[in-house]
Length: 524
Image (cartoon, rainbow, N blue to C red; front, side, top):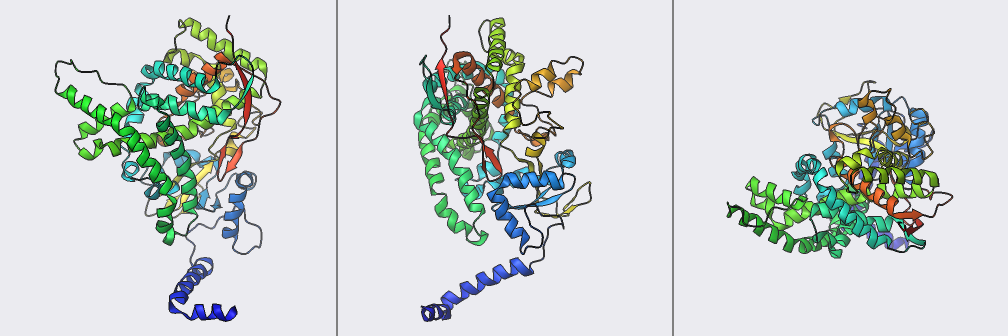
């Protein structure tokens, strides 16, 4: 056996790659000069060899322990946070959160970090859709401005989808919260993206959810592959993603072709006798594409690709948020639900039973429940991840010199779980923020800052600053209406304890198989 191995190694075709690989490993482990600042290493042990390498895998196995160590040992100083698949991040102290948000994109860039984190050049069939995200402007302007006009559609689809997933049974029955709410989120969100009846196409919904699950898992795997061979591995690893993308395009193409024909017909009909323009994201994207004059922009594959990317961004996070809120309520106190239901029904009565933007804005306890649940169960455990893109690097207020190309981040989980910031931080206090907003001795601006979609240094669930989640105002209204509908129309069988969240790398996700028992309420 040993002779066979020796003979193999003597062959140039075998020996050369082995020598190259060994040289690469020796260089990187022993000889390569470190570009990182000399900082303590989170997850390392005193006196151990290869502390960065070992800490990477240790932190991946237990990232909760890593962020806990960062908070207890390095709360007021920067530290290195190595993580397998994500490299060696520089975790800045919470005192420098505002400093990070104040930096221009020419110094700290979120977009560059996202491209690498999601391995967009491999996981996206048409990477230019993300490299040139023109649809972002529609999110920050048109979608946000249309939130009020979209409420009736969101309410209608919520009633239909929740009824379909949770059923009309007036006896208690068991259901999986995450699975059912993923379908509801998919349908309701696509009502705004592609309109009715396309939003109810089961294949469109299946592919949107499938894509949203494939991308982060595949990206995580690819980040752990040695960079020189990553393109080869990615060719095979991303096949399911590209297949899902092509199928989504085929599902969307008939709708897109019909919309494009309608758009052209309206241009040829100055008297306005043709069908009126629809009010959904697909229509806004078509108008933007046509006005650009670039034929690539209105290709069915391009338009479908943008809708698919929106599905990825919306379904993932919103499904987590609504699942967490439902589990929190179902394991809290019955009087909390009674109080919440009374607010919702009272406000609806004021507005004649109709859902609208003003009614949702008046439901401050409902808003508080969602903000408190997002605080307690935040998907984001370290926030404001940015890539240093300034060639000269970056010097922090505490004097740490961070080189070009490094990744920085700040604490989020430890701040959200801090009793000094949020008294009783590990308890679900559903009306924590509505109580604060009702204190009229505090100026209005500070009270309004406690709303679900408002970000701050102590609340990074949606990010913070100019790069905060652009769709958070729509998402907040969608989630509020959805939770309100459920609370008004269904009873929960209260549970004694809440299933714990799960850690997936640096992210926390709700227990995806957790079940509750519900029944449709019989109204007098």
